[in-house]
Image (cartoon, rainbow over all chains, first blue to last red; front, side):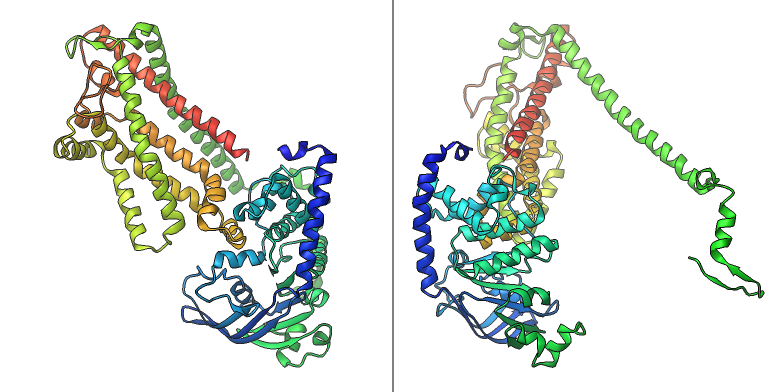
Length: 284
Length: 317
């Protein structure tokens, strides 16, 4: 790949300029308060199945909002509603509003493809594309043509990898296939890939459930670091994880919001009996 | 488990002791093997031999055939037989097979030009755009499976009625090629569909979540992923188009001349030489049949080889 053969001096100079530019851009964005969701009276159905029942929620910018609850409580459905990943699911129906910066994302004039550039997503199982590490991160910028030159693309790739705390580990082998990375590295690559499309919100759907404790800790650190520039939504059934990273915890049970609170208070003195049962491991 | 207790007859026992006293005299590696294990061992060997024998039974005739045609073909092949056209009509069978080589290549190019893009596009449609339960797609799938099973001579007759007579193309390269492409289509379509379906959904989800449209996802990821499978289908179809005789007898007839037109002009082909000249009484005709068979085998080999080279290159990405 040509990228490797750029002389260091030249690439450094270009990087500095581009870094300065992107930094100001992300600072501007960080200053304007970021993007938040307001969910109003949301009902979701899969055919006859009533999955989410009359949800009202606020997801604030620059905070980590955690959806927590037992399997089948609707937390994954809810997070997939936020970037319209459910649109193609057979029998998906919804009522109510999901407002992103005041605009209902289910309005007919919203393009679901463009919405996904604003609301990125990281999945439960790492799903790197079977192409090179570089091309994985460059995938978003390439399809959206958000770069002007090869150097700018190189820079976006580098910054995204740096933000995902992966750069040091992969900088010498950007041309190798992404499948050669370990599971934890793959997940951070997926985070870098999401960052590279310049979203405002990043959704994490149980991002650490397939990872070992060390990689989990890294991903958690990363999420905490990311909330400075992004709005972060995390789905997990792991209470310790929720307690470690959350600014706001939404406890869901059977499609309804049982309790919204802030850790550690919510874990120490839950208001609802259901929450207490779940925290103590007695809720099936 | 070490467990002490009282047995039914009242004597106390220690189960661990009981086990150790029994086995201590005969170490585990000298214990007698159970008869059932012996039986399984024997079966294991029998099956191994059967599997190996099957491979030999398949391979020996294949190698014998390859040897026969390579030996017979190479012993009579010459520049003249490859660069001259057939002479003497149906009586003698002299000259060369240039007319058949060019005819086969022309038919191959034409039929591939029709069947490969059509097959790949419809395979992409079936796998990516039509849902699993789409009515139209399941009809197409069924029809294409049936089509793959239709005897080629029946298709040849259909081609004769449809293209030679009804469309008025006469015995011609185009009539032959279109008939061949109908034969090739189901193989390409189904292998493309299956290859694309094998691409994991997590990859699709990942691309969609990055704001990729379906088309750019297919272009950049799924097709690349499915390429080996698609190429296998194309290779199979190309081999079929090279080796079919029956449909061409109906639609292309045969010709002793190098083709110069697509319509209203019969065209020669290698399998036609093998078919007609192997039944003739003269040695020169037999020789031509051997040469044609050898060239055909070489072409099939070449197609496979090229496909492998392409595969290797693309799988490096």
